[in-house]
Amino acid sequence: MAKLVAVQHQNHPSFSLLHSSSFSDFNGARLHTSVQYKRKFVQPKGALHVIASSTKKILIMGGTRFIGVFLTRLLVKEGHQVTLFTRGKAPITQQLPGESDKDYADFSSQVLHLKGDRKDFDFVKSSLSAAGFDVVYDINGREADEVAPILDALPNLEQYIYCSSAGVYLKTDTPPHYEFDAVDPKSRHKGKLETESLLVKRGVNWTSLRPVYIYGPLNYNPVEEWFFHRLKAGRPIPIPNSGLQITQLGHVKDLARVFVEVLGNEKASKQVFNISGEKYVTFDGLAKACAKAGGFPEPEIIHYNPKEFDFGKKKAFPFRDQHFFASVEKAKSVLGWKPEFNLVEGLADSYNLDFGRGTYRKEADFSTDDMILGKSLVLQS
Image (cartoon, rainbow, N blue to C red; front, side):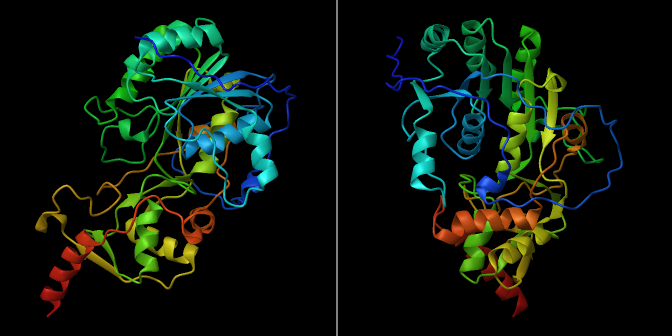
């Protein structure tokens, strides 16, 4: 049975197209380093910072957490009419650390809300068809069957912009992952693969972004927060195996910015882009970078063999224990996009605007650490 639609009762504000703003609005810092890569893509003419040429009526599926918080602000700044489709269980907007009450009030007054469950397909079809939208940003879509009703409801949709994942790639002995690499149909992200296939099959104008690990203020995944908890407590950092496993992190504000840059961009039509930071980092290097970003002393690092422990259902480390990183050269050359944050700058931004203010998503749990450190002390004695 279809649920009632609840749209925020207010007059639609008048919009004018604004120039793309720098992330200095979010206290960000620009990246000034250059990185060499093994493979190079040809730089197309006119690919730098293409902005949609007209105001769009935009629907964001999800959008109340993390990525959506920053994306929504950028879209509103550019003059678009933005509606969030959510179940209404969380506030539709939230004030950013350091954001003035006036700026927040101005922003939040322009965000509309469509309340419903995206798994109620009949409701999705009827409500979206009645409202009509030019562009859909799908931030929280996991399964293809959740996307089909949206496409059915919006036959004149101009663009479907999808948040996929670099986790779709098949494990390789020759990293980094490129957009043309083999994918893993058995991946836990297979629903995102099936969604990309559906978008191709339906012939819509789509763009899919595949982030690696995302970090930054308001992160609901314990990525940098896991390290910050241990650094603040003055505890050793337990890292599996050698600590030389290579990974990659991308700042949420850089991801939000590229989400805006693909809007209305012909070069992004029916394309997949890996999105993350430019440089890779080892697990040990990440622990040291978190310490530097938060102003802590260089940490003591303890390496352990995960096979020697039974952690039950608890996760002893926040990253997959393998090399996992992707090339972002396609996004840089085709879109003209470039991350504004290097790793330490980005981690400092996250720490200063979130954890360093005493806010975090999960309480510290050192139970698996204690198991590891207890065995380490026995072995040393």
